[in-house]
Amino acid sequence: MALASLLEFINCAAVVGIAIVIYPIVKRYSERVAIGYIAGRVIEAAMLTSGAVMLMTFGAMGEKLAASIGDAQ
Figure 1 (cartoon, one colour):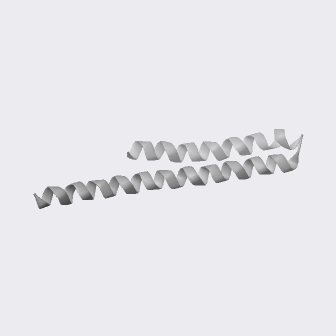
Figure 2 (cartoon, rainbow, N blue to C red):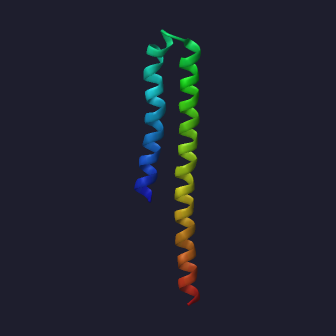
Figure 3 (cartoon, rainbow, N blue to C red):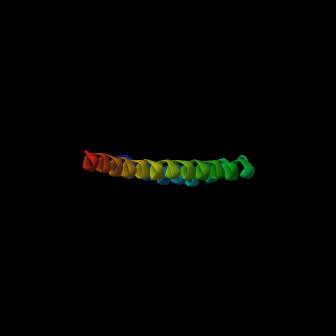
């Protein structure tokens, strides 16, 4: 789970990085579209980050639940 979360965070950085690298190319055609593209990719990165945080949280909660069930028996 930790590896999956790490890869998700790397993906978030790559998503925003790609948008920043492509910005000058798209800006030649339309600055509004270029800024909208970056905004969309930043929103995507935020949603991916929240998913990675939830993955880590649910993993920790599952481990604690399994430990508490094991102690009860």
